Length: 253
Length: 303
Ligand SMILES: Nc1ncnc2c1ncn2[C@@H]1O[C@H](COP(=O)(O)OP(=O)(O)O)[C@@H](O)[C@H]1O
Ligand SMILES: [Mg+2]
Image (cartoon, rainbow over all chains, first blue to last red; front, top):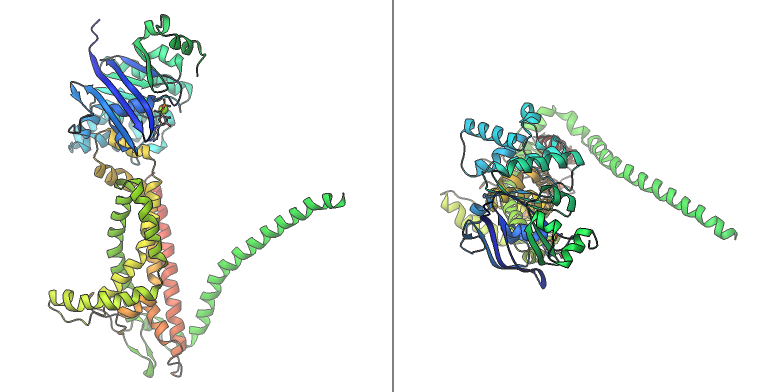
């Protein structure tokens, strides 16, 4: 089983003002696998995910040091082009945030930003990625309606399609099912499983069962420190750290 | 014992009373507008009876001594000055609000906000004096010669500039609040597909904030319509339909403020001034209704 790392983090430190939020994190995220970042709330999962696509830059008073290598480019380098980095990674947030425009325009937004104007090509992109996010059949009749008419679960899949439309290699999800009902959650999880043959997927979750169901690789953070990382089977069945064992048993939360 | 029992009842009575009182005050406030319209209408009946309405509204002849009251120059004066002020204020205010909301560090934003609000508290007459001392000479000596025309400086442009600065605070303040109310995540959704900050502002933030921005502009315009003192000091007050922004004008509020109590011996003159007030009030009401309709439509078209 080949296990090329797609994202490699080396000595990452993040401070918010005087608060040391991520402490010397080094880890690697395998290519075309689902990696779950787990840990109790407030331990820095979101911060870690947001340093992958530099959205962390927009936080007030943040200091970041260390290296995050994506395809052999250190994206934390001041010279790195953020728009270029970001289009490599689709992003799903805790709640779906559709853009204030039609369903069609939501998906076409990214491609248009990057200069695609041809209507037929856009039509084709919209259909392809709505299908990939398994939403096409539900919305094909009403592409021109505002995205806000969709249910939450549909909106989250629309956000997925919007991210996929700029042809990223990586999908980042920050507890992407936490606002959804069980059925919608399941559809998102299923979509992830279908997508992992083409994409490297990183999801933050605090639901252990979700990590067990989905993850090929697990990263466990606790109070800003990396406690353990490894293939999911080993992680859940043969944890090396006592802390991991306790967390899995539900003793820490 | 008895007191203890009575107490809750009196509290409830107070609550009831307060509720009723506030309802009454609200109704009174609403009635006040109607009363004003009715009062002004009654007072302007003599001049309304003296000549047809179309004549009053669209005639350019303002000759009170001959009983000719054409309001057209004043209506146009009001529209011109307000229009120029809005044209100057809206782009500048939006850019300022966008900068403060989207680009400035929180520290700068918190510093600038109160400064802008202070601007709102400066009395109108101070703006007027500033306009006379700075804006009017500037237009006379620099702007007018540049366009190879003569102007005393007392002009629509001077009124528009002064008025624009007076409506800056309300537009910036409201627009800033509206931009800050756009969820950060919506911006992130746009940034995450590789959009730049400016693209995000243009395509997402502005769009999401559109109803609120429209409301901010409406508030600014509403204030501009009625603003009297500062404008009166710099627009020249000449009762002619203006041809361009370097011409003087005579807006309705200035007409009323300048003449009420002065030339009331002329027959029908006071009635005519009442009509001027009524027209101003109706213009503002009409504008409010229109903007409300537009706002509702804008709100429905996005989301
Ligand atoms: N923008 C920010 N400014 C200041 N502190 C922050 C910010 N974002 C997160 N933090 C702090 O960083 C820590 C980790 O937060 P986060 O990464 O959101 O945790 P998680 O996603 O695991 O719940 C928390 O203590 C939080 O208070
Ligand atoms: Mg989080």
